[in-house]
Image 1: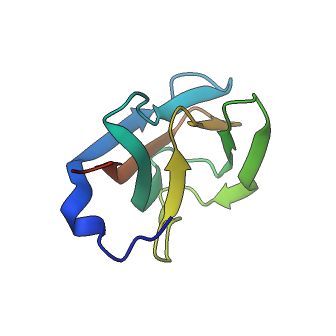
Image 2: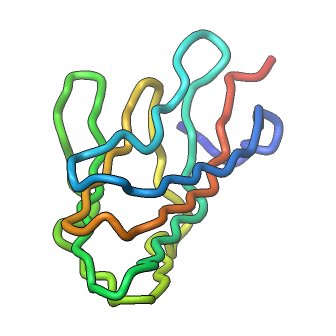
Amino acid sequence: MDLSSQRQYIQRAINVKYSFAATTQQTIYTAPTGDDFTFAIIKGFLACDHGNQQTNLDVSITDTGSNEFFIYKQHNIAAHATEELQTNAGIVIQQGEILKAQVNHANIHLVLSIIEYGKGD
């Protein structure tokens, strides 16, 4: 997909905020589906450990065929630390794909900046 004219197709920019209350895998974001959307780009991804204990973080993308692809596996976040997990141009999420995360201690906040794109005219 040619992204050179992506500004013409912007639909909306959103922030996704998630606070873990459990250590089971959680759905953080699902890319929209339908005729109006084609993909989303994660432009920023922050993880903050607000507890007094380091935490391991797993982050994955599940495609529409239910295949899971890990972005981070047991990524260590130090106690009371904030890390920018997204440092390049962005992670593209296609229609219907799901971003999931899991922690081993429920003391993590995630904040993602996401731009969702449509097909345009």
